[in-house]
Length: 396
Image (cartoon, rainbow, N blue to C red; front, side, top):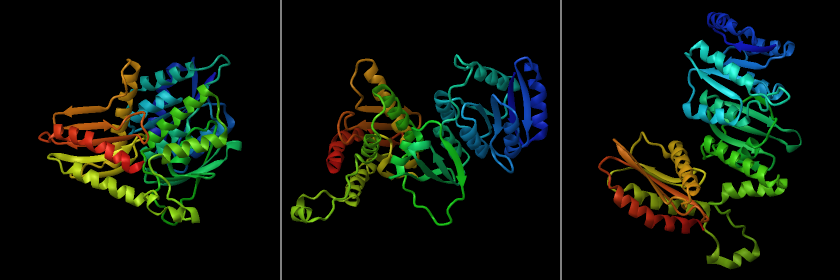
């Protein structure tokens, strides 16, 4: 018979939940543990089909327990009980692996049905095909605003590190890759091992600018493509990832003898590129009623932004709007239209305007502006159409 292990430090809640789930005793047996440390002991002694765990617990918390599950029980169905779940993250996670969220307070019947549904998702040999993915685990760290150094290893593919500061992904390193490139590479791995390491004592600079959700989506896209086309040579994959991340930011030229002779033909440095983009953004932000404006690459990384409203931070929100725009691109193509050039979202309190430089162009830029109800969005549309080619030329 299947065994379900429920982990929560609220003993009264744990006992009530166990008693209620006795109605399913013909389908599974319920085991309990008050924290992650005792849960690991149970897992060593008993074969468990489903783990249901809270995240905030003493000794070994829920995140550390899930890390143990990924490393030692990669095909066990995991259900996370949380009071701070995000509907969007819940949607993404449920689509991509067998990690489940259930938000407190919940109807006990809902948990029972979630367990039954999970147990029904077996292959012909009776096994659940996938456990918790690395991408979902990283999103949990983000949700719980945890500061940690996470080591990930995947056999011969190598190992790497993620550094989170209060739930924000600051940096990542994987072999010879750093930042976004390292994140995308590692998220593509299957059957990883995870270990929490002591956080570094010195301050770590924030190298990663792109939202974690956007990086996970890009890694999933690349993984889907490689599964269709056949796995690429590892060297080619590294080059592809680097090109994706750095396509809008040419590397600074070296100063060898041949380059020194070229003089004025040298490409501008990154700092000069950003200054040029910031000048364009200031013009956009100067349009009547503009609350915030930004220019992003196609992954949602904000290259330059300006905000006239302290409550709007495009570095945090830009990736979400960018994902909406990219979904619109795909939807338009599916119905036989070209990728959309422009999208407008109107609400009772304002208007959001987004414009694309051209989905098939290189570099591929998105511009976004958020305007108040009295903002001149017609002028903003015309200005974007004029300014995007200029921004694109600055990066070529």
